[in-house]
Image 1 (tube, one colour):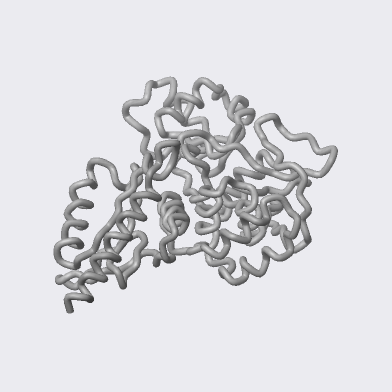
Image 2 (cartoon, rainbow, N blue to C red; image 1 turned 90 degrees about the horizontal axis):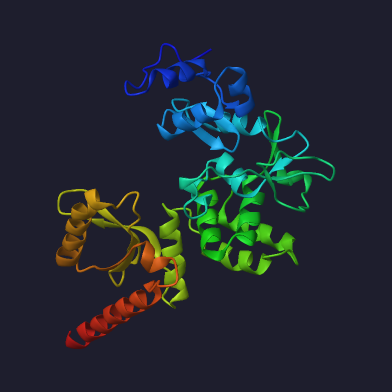
Length: 327
């Protein structure tokens, strides 16, 4: 069943409209299945570039109006993952809905599928096997015939195997799903003795906070702790005079010192005036001092957030001590 009956983009060339009408409106399909419907790769690529078709994983396409639900993601993966394999790592996190597990800039590309397959199972070239994996029966859950590591096992694997900054974001995101508690996650790490990356995992699980709302915020919190500052609260609420409240990404309410990560997705040019107005009010009316970090401050060779946080914290502590002496 094609997309007839839906609203078609008026700026599509006739050739692409005809191709779009051949695609199913209610199910993802492989590129091979699209070819059988008369839609070749050049047309699929053009439709993806126009934003009317999405490519959730390599080799799979879907009309962009299809809801991005758990059922949809399961159907996508069943098209490319053999029955004998287990979906793992970032792909498992994506399947469960932990969208902070993407690597930097992964939103700009089509992610590859992470799976573990038993010996002798051949994968399509577009898939990436995760290597050896010792999985206990309780580590794997089945969703409509698709085998996937549980959120708890996925968290342990990503906390071990990802680079440290990406690992804390993944752990925060998976914890936010509510399928396990932070205490359960901490206890689970004991079974991974001598596994690769277990030392990193055991340190990071002590810092997990499911209230984190973005990867940048999670990494900023990690940098804060690395700078030797007391552990901050997430999503600090500051009441306003008009009955609402402002939220600060991370902070120490007792010192009125906080930090915020301004990512491009939610803090671009259009939001900059509002951000500045809010922070000015917090500074002038509530005496908050806030260190603002952007991507270059947190990631890459020129990152300087540790120093900025340390300097800001020391200034606030010094001012607080002087205030107490005056009183």
